[in-house]
Image 1 (tube, rainbow, N blue to C red):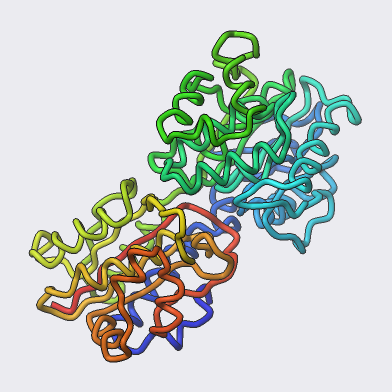
Image 2: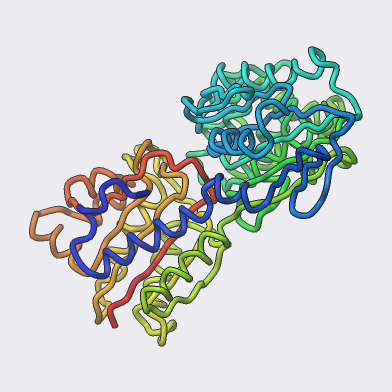
Length: 448
């Protein structure tokens, strides 16, 4: 069971179906399911097969590295597939620990703000190259998922971890999208933007990737540690200028980017011939599973996009207008996936983009003439705060709030949706860490 408080949420038939659809989507992209479909290991010939591409390991060894919110469960599953006896050593950084691995060390690191444990984990991975003399016959299997950018920190020379923490917090609060944030982070890192893959050359690096990025842009997922980088120092510096962060950012970080712009620091690699990257899971897969579940329930689903982006408030208002206005006539389940971005105020309250989306929808959908449910949830189980994946509202939520004297608009304006939903009740979607991450899933379930 993915949603822990499902009994609280399913106060109507529409809500019960919404819970089933969300759980179907998250279950589809759990690492165990994705890896079993994508990876096989043939012990007799010592051949690893990834999506029908074979890697001969008869003369080499296997090492495991990586990081992200899903890396712990990915490590567990890859040990089952390959067998711990076939793995020489491994280390991955994850948001949590306690995974049942034998050869792969799972290191609990900080997210969304990087910490010293994350640095320790990355340096443990890097140290394996010298300790085991990793060479051209060996294979380095890299397990990458969303969250890897902050979970795998390795600051560039002259930039401290505190500098990276500070600039990450500024970027998260200013409204920068994930690609912009990663462009800055990879240029302040030794391993992001292809640096990790380049480090292990001449060994073959094979990355198994669960994507949380809109459009599955490889060099943006976890800041592309094994992907040649298309962004530049200038683009990283331009992000700071765009959001007025040059003066607010740590001087060491700004100076490093300036040196890079002047050609005084090495650019991220633009070619990586020793790295193969495979996306084994993404948001589209979750939406397809939700569509299939909807049909099984006798519903008529329609997926609008798996590449949703834009300002959270604007998107919620636009979608409400389209749904209530009959744009999707003939369908009673409207699905979307991706990641919107709220532009927070200086004194923003508690809650993430999914809770804010649901809160805005309470007001935006009030003129809808038929029963409805709107739900928005992060597939990782964390909507910028532990345990809470998002929120669910319906055509009775606004009246319940008004009867209780709750000023919904005030909470929306203060970006304090978590407090709003705690007062309202039967709204927050509680999952805890799911062990995967393919960004957000959103649904409109209509009783028309």
